[in-house]
Image (cartoon, rainbow, N blue to C red):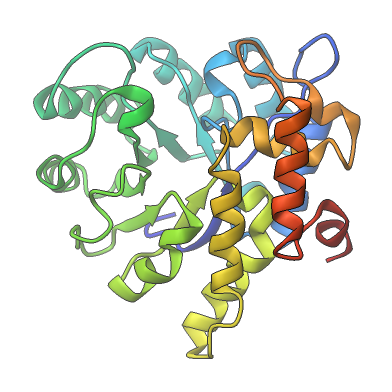
Length: 294
């Protein structure tokens, strides 16, 4: 998966009433997002509540995911603070022939570039056959990658460090590396990013905007006039008014009630916010009915 390209969703996790992971529904959702236009999906990113789901349930999902018709289109997020758990989970994934990972540095602790390089060095030394997408999201982990840090990691591990998901947006305009994928974390950065040489996007809201985002991407690649980029950015802007996970699950529960289940401390939107979300999306002719009809 060296130099991934295209539209990737940070896929959602679907939970049962008892808050256990519904493996079949989670995989079905990821496959549906690909069918709707995404080139692939990232499983167990922050949108997938990765930090809240037990390891045993993640492993059970990996076993079933390995039989998916879209197996080669999955990035596997780890979602652990622990270096040991990250490596052990990757070993399980590797045993099932997954090799592409999305990995964020640990949260809570304060550290800098030197420590981050050491963190990824330990991972690569343990799993040298892995392909790693760095996850740059200061808001969640407290650390923001510098261009110098990314360049040093790529120089040190050119076969393993193959890209970055940039949700802090300090890299996608400035980082230029050969055979390296730069993927902003928002649809609002898609067109500008492509114009700057980025490879695509990895975003939460591609769970609902897959068709629109794919058209923007395809039209850019073909040199066609952009006809839906503004709508794509508007839809993203509506969801950004809320916690993205809460907003996405609230939106999808209009399709099926099971989406209303979230692991604490997360929750779906309250009644007023839900009404505002739906009404604001409808202003741009965007609804769960139109999404399902696409």
